[in-house]
Image: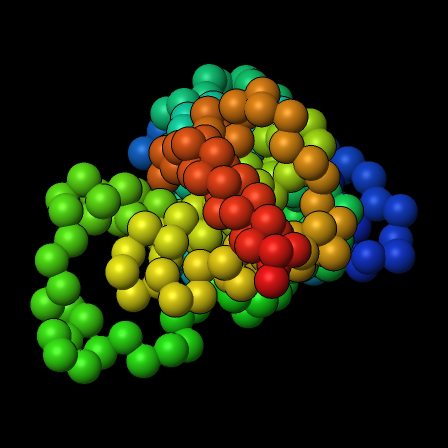
Length: 249
């Protein structure tokens, strides 16, 4: 395939940035999207030009690093990660527009690379179990109903890629935060800290500058792991319960 790539180039966070067009030929439909960018970068390096910077790591759809906005959609036309998107999803002669995530809380570092450490700080605010939940019986021997275990595992599938933020018109991080709150709130090991966890993680999410949720469902539709917006409803219940409890103390 022969393609025209319209790629966002930006030297650093203070640079204005802009789109630059690249012609790329000989693209196999069996290539992944990132392999196609590798081919482009090899050509640019051969010409002595600065290659296009983009985030990636596992290339197996589990790390959440490959955060690209492709033709107006997070991760492109398929509901998957960019590394699992193949060039067969595009057509010969097509123009493909590639951008970084667009959110105040995800500042551009260079080209297509954004700083998503805001997610790390939300996790650090309370997305963990710090109390001793072992003893008799051990934590891994506590009976958990299958429906509860399934919901917790579904929430735990979130890979923190940020597609939910990129898809949301308000750049909301509610789906990500609610998944991290839910996976622990549903399990016995997370009960002791569930109220402080909800309060601290929501407070950190707001402090990072993410927008509010208006229930359009775009986050769920674009999430490569299919995280449900029912987690947002659960987090809201957890948060309001925690706030009411705090006020009554």
